Length: 274
Image 1 (tube, rainbow, N blue to C red):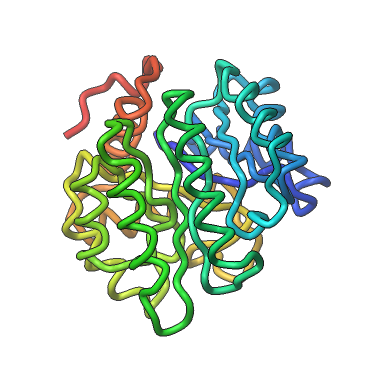
Image 2 (cartoon, rainbow, N blue to C red):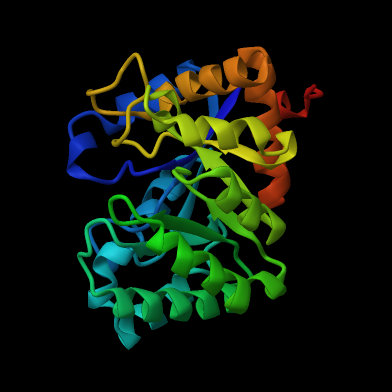
């Protein structure tokens, strides 16, 4: 059993076969999916909610991605404040900083990040963090982690570093602030040495797995459209690294997911994880 803790099923890449993709995930043993509520911008922050209303095993987030931070407005914040009360919304995100593409000015990204921290705190929701530095620099991490430390950590709500791409030092900093670390398909890429090094050291009860579909399809599907069923390959690589079976990693990360989000476990997930 597995949980895809982060995917984007709302976009046009799934328009032709979305229901079939979700069915394949279930057939592969994926018992829960988190649909990220960014869409193509602030007007679509309910996209995850729409999927969660259709499928009882799908949960939702909402938030303004750093790419679209320049489009934030008081009206959007007010709408998100209302949507955050939806019973299927379990986190605020993905939010954070992206200095790789710089689609929004960095100072605007920081302002919108901080504003959403306030909204998430008011809603008592954990955050899902996107942090991508510019090429050959840790600058986004050097801004993101201190902002979390100063403005979020003391609230006790924690969050997830999604699709972790940093090193062990950065992972340790987030762990110390109550965060989970989520690994995606890039864990399987040959050059992802620092990611695998961090994956070896993160405590077993603080790890999650995800696909970030439709992006970052893992080996052996690399180059294809990613989908939730492929989360098994990330689990497989994580098991190889930690000398654990695929089933053990599936059970552990599933239990971690339900525990962190304080969700009622299914009968299958109550099987004792090693």
